[in-house]
Length: 294
Image (cartoon, rainbow, N blue to C red; front, side, top):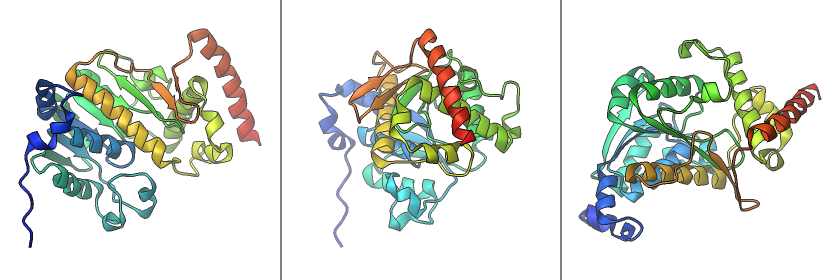
């Protein structure tokens, strides 16, 4: 049997030099990032971060890979169907960088946020669990951690929520103020999703790039989130760039409101100003009301 080649971090990352300096590459090696959700955009972001040479991660996900994940999740394959996402992901990451420091987390990870966020100042939110996301953002503010996230949208997007920024539940108007995140009912979760989708429709051209009958089923809870490989993987890569900029202290981070990248029109869509958003929001609410009457 052929022996595995010896691993050298320096050789592994040698082609990074030029995009980053050797000193910056060492900063990436020293970085530690918490990734919540290693499926779609979280998995794509994680893969990019690992291949750029980030040295350590904590990974939180208690789901297993399914055949339906294979259309966009970079660590999903026939070989991983039925295997825990974290277990399968760690095995594949070890084949990229066997020296990675990896901490794996189970279902109890939201209850460990005080400890985790004291050690991981950068967090990638790749979850679609509204309640756990609210808990994450609240604790991130307490511990001074920055959360990199994206919207539920048919266009790639990215947000960077720093400790002083308003939490998404405040900025988007979730009906969760003062609530225990563990007490969210399915109805409240759907109401939160509705607020997020309203924001997406107001501030991007997303409505032009999705089947509205399917979007209606998503909003009513009858259908899972739509996902398309180029959109999901592009989103993950945008998130990875923001994480790299944080580690390297590069300027021009995305902000808490974020932006949308439209690959269909080759444009970056930024949030509207307050007056334009107010006018469009009224139209969006009328549209959504008609959608559910039909």
